[in-house]
Image (cartoon, rainbow, N blue to C red; front, top):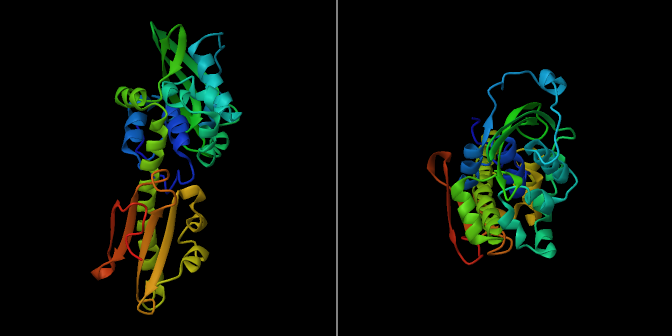
Length: 299
């Protein structure tokens, strides 16, 4: 099983839905930003035994004949619908279905930013290599990348039969129970969890960026624009559209010190906790956070 990867690193701009729908189903490394998502991924999406097969062998390997109504057909339809941006239809093929059923079209559009990268993450050609059916359970083997842009690797996708139809297991039992209980609120809460964790990681990245900058500039800290220009910080730190948080870096004492804050762009919708980064002695830093009603922890 692959180790979970940080959202702010290899999956930085892969959305909440992509973490759930692409990585958990595909068997890839999942977001460390949401432990529940990680648990779902590690429980349900495993790397196939032949993971050492080269990408060339995988991409040119045999395909199975896909029978109508089979587990393989469900997997094929799932990825086709994701690629076509038919998200509601795709999610209906998984056990995440109760989380999408209650969302109106307008509510689903609220996740537009979260959804925009999914179609690009799905491979143009999903090669299905195997299918094993055992009663009401099944496993489909397919060649899929472990993260967007990576070479395809053999992955196993688990399914179960529900009311005569095959359903992809994208969440474990505990997560599934929570989804059934929370319904459409599950995705909203998960988005908050992920973005709050991303906010903490962004502040940690600011700390490392300032340390690197100060070592090259006689102990002086840098403005956000300069840190972005040097490649120390991503440009989307300037906008809350993709991050859900408003970031501020304040230089004090002539630039010899600083503090940074992360505040929810829309309290209760993109996040609840506000975060504060304050350097301490020895160049180390500490990130603290709490629910402050949508206000910064330091002005």
